[in-house]
Image 1 (cartoon, helix red, strand yellow):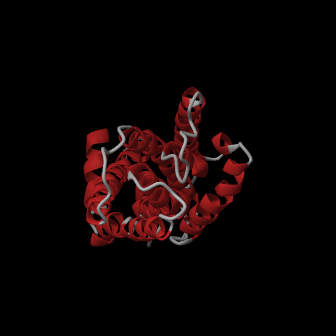
Image 2 (cartoon, rainbow, N blue to C red):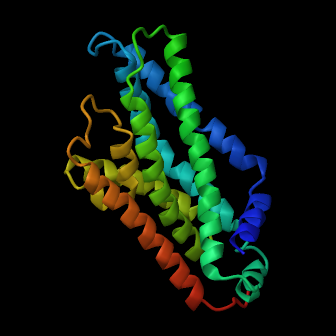
Length: 244
């Protein structure tokens, strides 16, 4: 049953807009971060690590959450149009499989985005002539960012499910991401799913923000993922068909 749901979600998510967003939006923070790096070479040490801090400053803080929100909003878009919600509610498919299939498809785009961010980082550094070895921890940051993004996807799928508007959950993601900059600065980043990407990617920090705090980070990420997945399943079990 789950495989059938995944196949259905893949068919519905083949629209070019998702791939354009997945491959196009990360170009913006990469370009902004590269120019920011070049503009600050008089006050920062040249190298791969500082290039990473500048690029993730924009990606993790401002672009990652809205991009995830867009993907998740699109995955629920068809169900909110016409009478497709009623079709979903009356289909002989367990709700856990519906939610999980959407989450897995969202994760597919997330993984592609994370890999693409890594590729763009290497390309940008090579183009501007960054010397030295690429820090191995960069790949760790990408993996941690994937976990953080999965937790965020679970939250955004929940919001996109209960809110029929396509744009409102994306706006929530943007403001949640901006608000989490303040939350993280106050040392409470583990309390916000939007802040986990910043922490996982070590955005704009020379030292690893999660040094000695990996377990709390993993607990926050997995906890948020499970919480919003269960909330989504519970909501679908209780909600009724819609008259319009």
